[in-house]
Image (cartoon, rainbow, N blue to C red; front, side):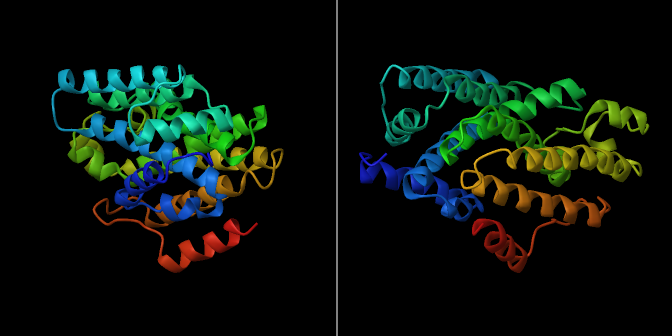
Length: 281
């Protein structure tokens, strides 16, 4: 990573900054080379996610996603064509990142691009979480410094915990887009019709959300248990992400999904406390 072109690093970092998320600050706990590698992973995910979210027909999105499949394959043949792929190439070599994990991310984005997801069954939801979150985790733990099987298990559980928390946070926003990521088994058991409008307004929704939150919490707990079997320094960023999202899940529980239009966020002091508590371990 030390051989990276400064202009390429700056271009990748600009993508991360422009996203306006807490990811940029969260990765500050990493050494410089690992941080730049994570920025490249984030930039890749941001680009393919933007393709999936673009309000154009799938017929226009699929060639762009397929182009990224080709570009990822080319990376493993040593070919690059822009700042993101050039920094990714260095990250792949430095941290032995696996091609199948990049391709899994694209597969997940294609699901969003080609399908209006409404109440997937539990198996489909689990696969989606693996593709868009746990696959990113499997790339990330290697950059963090632990390529063990235990670290992959951390990625398995933490990715699912983070994605389920996102789903529980974004119910109203997803419904506005005609989407429902809550599992159909829980909705059906609560007597909620499988339509975005019904899900958003049904009085049994808080019960369904509480049940899914319990599943998410189980993944947080399992991730924490497996982190204890991993390299402590390598897991620093993962602990911070886990603690931040677990705190967000707790805030969602307290709000109780009674007013979906009211954003649930962590306060700045709470974020700072978490950063100090887990970023300095």
